[in-house]
Image (cartoon, rainbow, N blue to C red; front, side, top):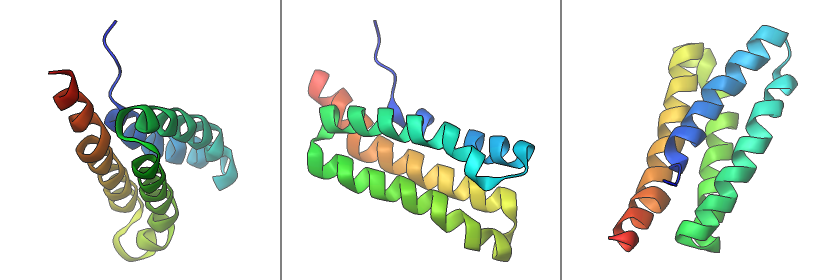
Length: 105
């Protein structure tokens, strides 16, 4: 069974978390998507790149989610959400997914 890369899960969960929160009318409801996704990603990041890298990537993920709120006031909601999702996804690919692929080859 092919392993699922973390980059699309990290990026997609930020977008999905926003959509869930927006639909519910409460930001906190988006955590129902963000917490399990971040937990799964952190577990995979640790397996693929080690504990220090997993901690750093979790920090990037959380900064992307938290940072999108004030950024949305300056650039708009969708650019902020997509920018945060892109940053989290790119960092995940660079640090964990790409490394895991290189190790397997």
